[in-house]
Length: 212
Image 1: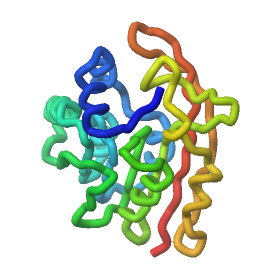
Image 2: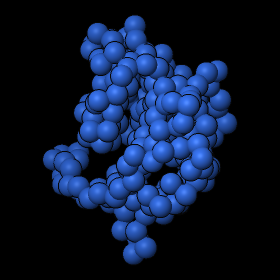
Image 3: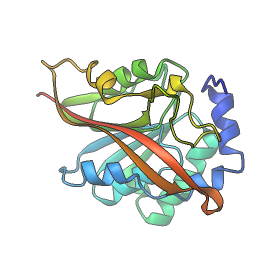
């Protein structure tokens, strides 16, 4: 299935049957694993959806900006942050990540399966540009398989190849004179989806530190 990943696409996702399940999810395990030992500072979650990762970061002392194109997702995220008692540590921004520019740089920039209406690797370049010197970039994305298997999520057939990448294609975009790559891995998990339906998820995870 072809997608443009524009505002209409994401509004439909967040008003559809999957919205409730996505709006109650836990923080991504790769975020917990990779970022749990960092000293809190300022953070941006680009493509934050219903805010699971934002809330987790805020609960651990980070000042977090959550940016997403879908108003319905941000509304749900705001409700959840208030319920968790961290609303004062969070700022929500309605943003098209293909064109938006933050007014500051961040100690941490994370993105989890975010797909703006632009080439995926170009979006990762944009995310990297938002990291302050000495800061950390964490990308969790859909792993590209040459055999066409990407796992499920957006659709029964899984995310399209245009939304996928490999660790090598992502790290190749990070200038080694500016970045130290900490993690570059590809993993395969089985998770419970809506209705407790098990689905395969193939992830690419890249964590890098920008030199100060």
